[in-house]
Length: 91
Image 1 (tube, one colour):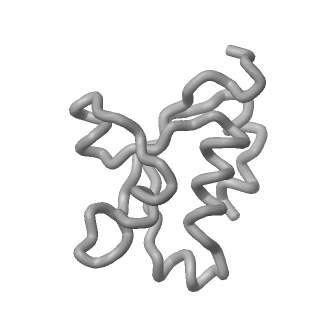
Image 2 (cartoon, helix red, strand yellow):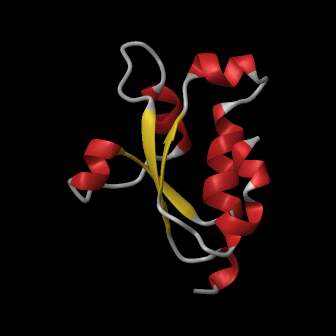
Image 3 (tube, rainbow, N blue to C red):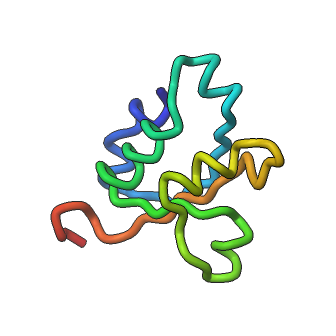
């Protein structure tokens, strides 16, 4: 809901973000990891990283890796969303 409410900022200012995402949090609000991932990556053109991968200049997560990070044994609850090229080729 926070990301849905921040569409102007995500689409315009495009800040780098640190966000928490857990399976229990998603379940509490009837959300799905796929919704968060798709909204950020496809609609707003962000890449999502584990903090350690972003700091090491590693590759962004794909959807299966994003979902897996939240399954025991947990790899992360905090993720970094980094703006990439704007969707539609606009910078």
